[in-house]
Image: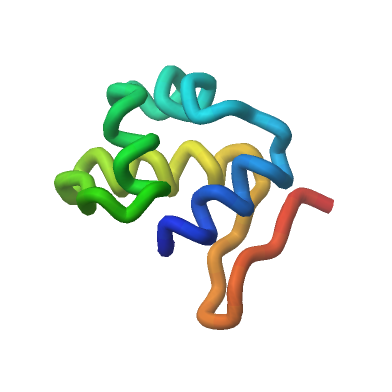
Amino acid sequence: MTPEQCRAARGWLDISQSQLAEKANVSLSTVRDYEKKRRTPIANNLSAIQGTLEAHGISFTENGITGPA
Protein backbone atom coordinates (compact mmCIF):
# COMPACT_ATOMS: atom_id res chain seq x y z
CA MET A 1 0.00 0.00 0.00
CA THR A 2 1.34 3.39 -0.97
CA PRO A 3 0.52 6.68 0.75
CA GLU A 4 -1.55 7.62 -2.31
CA GLN A 5 -3.51 4.37 -2.10
CA CYS A 6 -4.15 4.98 1.58
CA ARG A 7 -5.58 8.44 0.86
CA ALA A 8 -7.68 7.11 -2.01
CA ALA A 9 -9.02 4.26 0.11
CA ARG A 10 -10.04 6.66 2.87
CA GLY A 11 -11.76 8.83 0.30
CA TRP A 12 -13.59 5.87 -1.12
CA LEU A 13 -14.75 4.87 2.35
CA ASP A 14 -15.44 8.52 3.31
CA ILE A 15 -13.47 8.29 6.55
CA SER A 16 -11.10 10.86 8.02
CA GLN A 17 -7.50 10.32 9.01
CA SER A 18 -8.54 10.36 12.66
CA GLN A 19 -11.25 7.77 12.06
CA LEU A 20 -8.78 5.49 10.29
CA ALA A 21 -6.23 5.94 13.06
CA GLU A 22 -8.82 5.07 15.70
CA LYS A 23 -10.06 2.00 13.83
CA ALA A 24 -6.49 0.80 13.17
CA ASN A 25 -5.43 1.56 16.75
CA VAL A 26 -2.54 3.78 15.65
CA SER A 27 -1.84 7.44 16.33
CA LEU A 28 -3.25 10.14 14.11
CA SER A 29 0.29 11.35 13.41
CA THR A 30 1.14 7.90 12.03
CA VAL A 31 -1.61 8.14 9.42
CA ARG A 32 -1.01 11.82 8.70
CA ASP A 33 2.76 11.47 8.32
CA TYR A 34 2.45 8.38 6.13
CA GLU A 35 -0.03 9.98 3.76
CA LYS A 36 2.18 13.08 3.49
CA LYS A 37 5.23 10.85 2.84
CA ARG A 38 7.02 12.21 5.90
CA ARG A 39 7.79 8.72 7.21
CA THR A 40 6.87 5.10 6.75
CA PRO A 41 5.20 3.58 9.81
CA ILE A 42 6.73 0.58 11.54
CA ALA A 43 5.60 -2.68 9.97
CA ASN A 44 2.89 -3.56 12.49
CA ASN A 45 1.29 -0.09 12.25
CA LEU A 46 1.33 -0.14 8.46
CA SER A 47 -0.19 -3.60 8.53
CA ALA A 48 -2.89 -2.41 10.94
CA ILE A 49 -3.78 0.50 8.66
CA GLN A 50 -3.96 -1.68 5.56
CA GLY A 51 -5.85 -4.40 7.40
CA THR A 52 -8.43 -1.90 8.61
CA LEU A 53 -9.00 -0.60 5.09
CA GLU A 54 -9.26 -4.17 3.77
CA ALA A 55 -11.74 -5.08 6.52
CA HIS A 56 -13.94 -2.28 5.16
CA GLY A 57 -13.90 -3.68 1.63
CA ILE A 58 -10.80 -2.15 0.02
CA SER A 59 -8.55 -4.46 -2.02
CA PHE A 60 -5.00 -3.47 -2.89
CA THR A 61 -3.69 -4.69 -6.23
CA GLU A 62 -0.56 -4.20 -8.31
CA ASN A 63 -2.49 -1.72 -10.44
CA GLY A 64 -4.16 0.28 -7.67
CA ILE A 65 -7.11 -0.34 -5.41
CA THR A 66 -10.65 -1.55 -5.71
CA GLY A 67 -13.43 -0.64 -3.37
CA PRO A 68 -16.39 -2.26 -1.77
CA ALA A 69 -19.03 -3.55 -4.12
